[in-house]
Structure formats: structure tokens, C-alpha cells
Length: 112
Image (tube, rainbow, N blue to C red; front, side, top):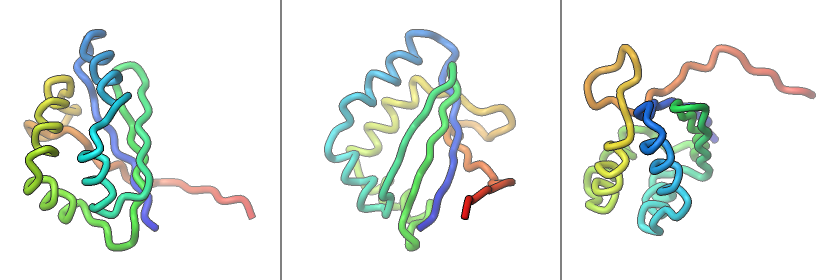
């Protein structure tokens, strides 16, 4: 099992933030299926103001390259991503149209 943390910024506009939250209350079954097919077994998105954090747990065969290839071949996912893109903005220091950035793990604690 692999775990990733990704971050993304929404436009700092109350309407955009609320619209993004609202559209995640009823995600289309085709989008959920595309997540599953890519090898993701659990995904959670958290929000603080306009900053999003996504915790993604995936099987050992998962890769972001594989997910990108599957997504680019799926018109429904392309439509979903374009729709969400109107609410998202670039993280500081990222290339144009860069939405989600993978965070580097720098610490871990496990109780035994």
C-alpha cells in the first residue's frame, strides 16, 4: 500500500470555494470508478480556507503516470477536471495549469 499527500489551492473567492465543496457532495459514479480502476483504494480531501489537502492511499501497482494515461483517455474525467479547474489556481512556484502537488514526507511516527 502506498500513501500520498497532495495539496492544491482554490481561488480565494468564497463562491469558488463553496462551489468546489458542493460539487464533491455528489461525485458521479463514473469519476469514482475511474479512481478505483487507477488503483486508488481510499481518497480524502480536507480544506483549510482555500488550501486543499488530499490523502490518497493506493495499491502497490499505482503510479501517477498510469492514472494520467487513464484519465486522458476518459472523456468523463476530462470533463470533471475541466469543471473543477475553474475553481482551482496554481500553487506558488508551480508551472501553469499545475493543480495538485505531491508533498514530500519528512517525518513519520508509528506507535508500537
